[in-house]
Image 1 (cartoon, rainbow, N blue to C red):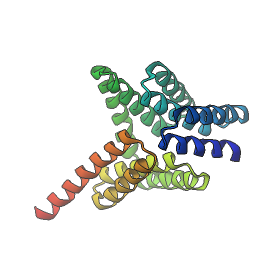
Image 2: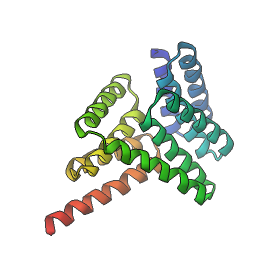
Image 3: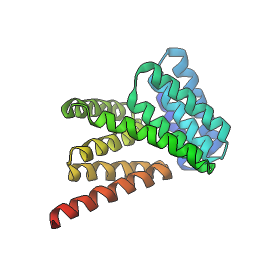
Image 4: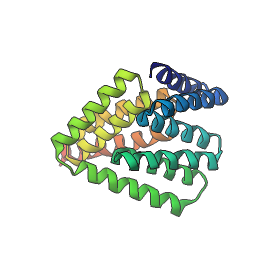
Length: 205
């Protein structure tokens, strides 16, 4: 487990340095270890990492294959949040290919899942995010931490807690920036601007 986590960490490091061949090698090796030990969580995270890597290199068919495999694991394990994140990844992929109608379809489906999750009991949703964040922090998974912070932001926004939401979006944005995940950083920045504007409007109204 430690070897695969270290390899995933090396993959993130190489990605931030645009060492794409080394990134791919590290992620594939981590994927093989996770598959051998039956760790679905690790497998799906490395698949998403490969998907993002291939998308950044315009290897669209390889990216699509990685995201679809990740989506299948999330569906089998019942992870709605993971499904939504992967649908968003597919949406970004199709947007990169200017397949706008297909991208919109996946973005809409992801948003529906995010909304559905946010509408569950607030305390249960918050507890789930906190547990996920603790795990990601413990194993040193920066991408998982960033995604969870963004999920916190969505949760707090849905329940009108815009100040807490803004803090989470800002922290997610900083983590994405450190990993050079520009699309994710841009999305977190967009949500941060939205909740900040809503907060300012409520103060002046």
